[in-house]
Image (tube, rainbow, N blue to C red):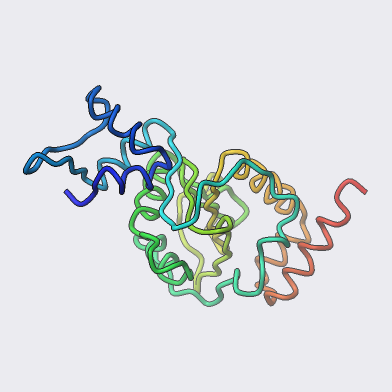
Length: 221
């Protein structure tokens, strides 16, 4: 038992009074130790997952719904990881080990939610691309998390078209609307042969940023 009512309140971005009401109604898993309420972190995460409740594992306040107008507002050169030593059985843990997050962010929760999503269906969407993401919004910092990983060798991630994966795009959104807008941006980019070829050929991070900016600037023109 490693969480208090205050911890759960922060994790679920809900007032402590609401958590207390959930306890009284016996609607949330908890235990009483020495007349105090305690919670198992993994049980709370799974409880939230079942109910599609967003989780906050950073020190940032609750985010309001908003759409991402362009990926260049959240991408930079550090968003791309090359020559990654990834394996099929541990690639999620290995990628999270490379990502720079605030020290207080519990990467274990991110991995747990990513694995829960993969257990439902592989996020390898075809054409050598995989797009792992949690099933629920997850606040890990001021901005959503989007990173591109290029494995040293293609991975067999049970892609829908049977092709090995040469590019993994890790996506963690803070709100549902944000997640949908990011998926829309990525879907449009991946529909462009120029962008897919740039990923497969592992162009430099600056070249990829330039291509993304060009494609998005001409969208709808």
